[in-house]
Amino acid sequence: MDLGLKGRKALVCAASKGLGKACAESLAEAGVEVTICSRTRADIEETAKVISNKFQVNVKSVACDITTEEGRTSALKVSGDIDILVNNAGGPPPGNFRDWNREDWINAVDANMLTGIELIKLTIDPMINKKFGRIINITSGAVKSPIAILGLSNGARMGLTGFCAGIARETVRDGVTINGLLPGPFDTDRLRGNLQVRATAAGKTFDEMYTAAANENPAGRFGAAEEFGKTCAFLCSVHAGFINGQNILMDGGAFRASI
Image (tube, rainbow, N blue to C red):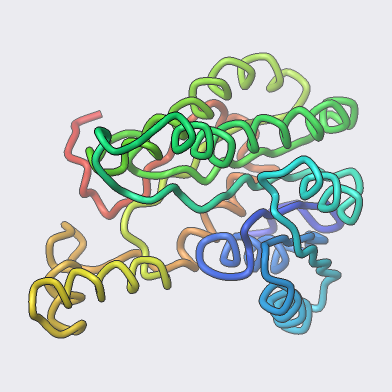
């Protein structure tokens, strides 16, 4: 399927690896000129080179902290006016809410709520003027099915989700859609690192823990980053202009609900 995106421009945040990288790859495959950013220069430059060589499109890289005003300015200076924004940021650490102080909450809100809002504010009006724009917020399955130890993430990401639920109904008339992608358990470095910690604590091997955790999912496996990236690219396509203000959960059916 031709996604109708050839020649469009995108900024994908936190894209040196994992789900962000997968989104950048799928957009590049569709002919999008992609700018990717992350904090580590060597990693983001290598990822840009790999994607560019694989899909023969222009891929720019920016080493920055997108959660800061300076980082956002740097990223948008390189990307220029964009048609697609993929908001993405690593989640705050798990823990017990009794141990979190005001600084912990402010850091979580800055990274997982306000950063996305600021990037939307900086990019959405040019999209409206062009009568085309796609904004994807990569949040978490915990937005729909909260996990107690992820309270910082639950709260901050719900803030971004609620904000976008309001403005999405205003921008869609001008061809700009805003949607959330909510990942469940995907086979990423982060998931594997967490499984290793669990395996060590339980006195099990990594393979034992990996297999057991995968079997807990109705699909009997973890999601593949490529699946996530392809879904992101479709939501950015010309075929998805009537999908707006939605939060699409990708978790293999782990969240049990009829609707």
